[in-house]
Image 1 (cartoon, one colour):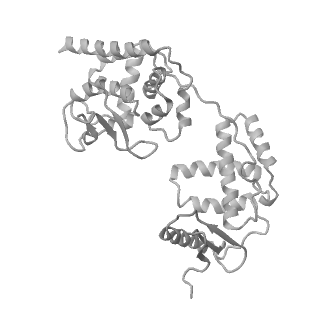
Image 2 (cartoon, rainbow, N blue to C red):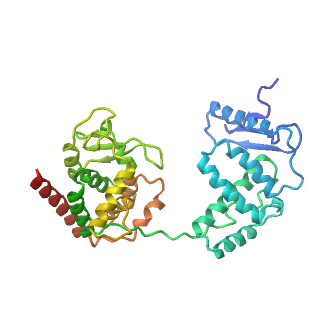
Image 3 (cartoon, rainbow, N blue to C red):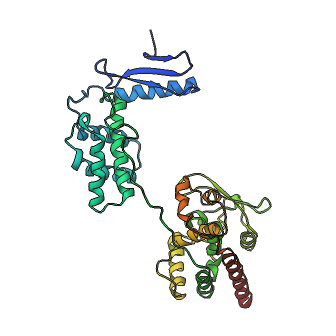
Length: 361
């Protein structure tokens, strides 16, 4: 007796199986073929997962007239076991809006033109192209999941039939060199203990949360590398070279060991992002700078000055820890004409900071 009915290896080495989509021995069966080179253990695990999911649907007959509402209901049942609560709320909100247009519509009657019309209607309502693209993405995911379940014989909106709306690359604001100098001067006067943190933010182009969580175990001054254990958005380590300016900052700090925090308050406590935001806005306003400048602008400034200095976008992408080069394209409009000004301004700010610290010691 077969222990895995429908599971087999094709002559070309690929693994394939066919199972009943609704977990019974009735209705259509779904055929799945894994890519060539997939290990048997991985194929068996994928097969058993597919069987388990089909079994979870046992006893639920496929609707004779499958509407988008029916499909969305089944899709959300799966997503509720996978998505984080915050993400799930956003998906449910998107699905609710999609149901206003497609709720009672039979999926088999959908056409690519229906999706295109939806895109234009949402744009006319004032929604941004990137938000419309997000809604359409979830709509297509639901439809294609029904094809995978075997509840639809074909995809009514084939891949490539609907194009995503063009999304303009945003131009990012950043500190001008003279603005950064004024900010550092105000910071030195009001909260000198926070100066190393903000200088390091500029030199590493790190997120505030990443920097305040930097550990001494991730600092290798001899090897000139610093490693952030966990990126906020990608959830994986990011390693950067230690420049002479950053090395100067790190060497001046009280040296810790192991998982001790690198940047701490004078009393030894940990900096918090909210506390640093408050310090930033206080110094910004004291320096009479633009209200459009925020803490995260420092990260954009580091990347923008790299772009102005002629650093390739692919390297800026790596330093920022972006998962997709398209995230880095926001800096592509910056030219190299400000190279000398930017570099000289950074050096001037560093010298100014050292002079002021020397005068107060």
